[in-house]
Length: 226
Image 1 (cartoon, rainbow, N blue to C red):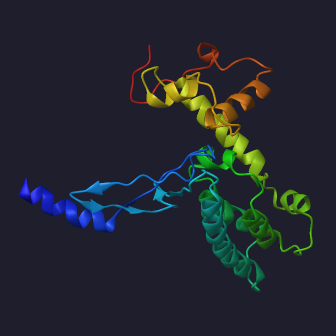
Image 2 (image 1 turned 120 degrees about the vertical axis):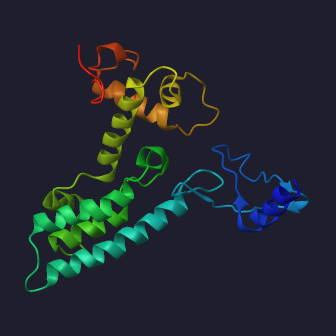
Image 3 (image 1 turned 90 degrees about the vertical axis):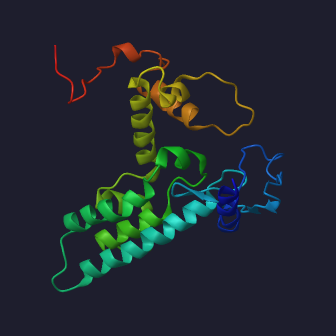
């Protein structure tokens, strides 16, 4: 017991905790947590599994970090395209998808539907690096020339894909339960389930996402067929 207590004390010095809620009235709430009499430090913008949270779940800090990362990588892509032996547009586009867009799409269904600006400046910057167009070029023209969908379109694709995968899982799987759970919303801000469900109804002409049986269920490759 003493050994366990000694291990906990350094842990409280290295770790922090944070809170997040979509309700603006609860955003300022700050609980006090102590372990063995030592208070745990409060962090208003904690990072968990690579996602930076904030008190009201706006993900503004996460968007800023993603933008910085993608711009740094887009600068490298621009240098590859501006040299005398520079790569072709198709190669630069594939490089951006591999090292740039992958950063934007990390856990995207969870946080992109919540942000207000669904066209991240990072992708426009990277798309101009791919095509070599001027900064004054309209965003739509840059995306068309680079053959890249907008962040809004891509987020819809990722959301419906994640939603469909959740519906195919067994009923006792937590992800399936989150996708099919029916609960009221306390605030005006929608969550991943409502966002994906709306896209589902738009695609399947208003049908509710309860037609899982009509979807083709693929057999796992490690199981033998009938």
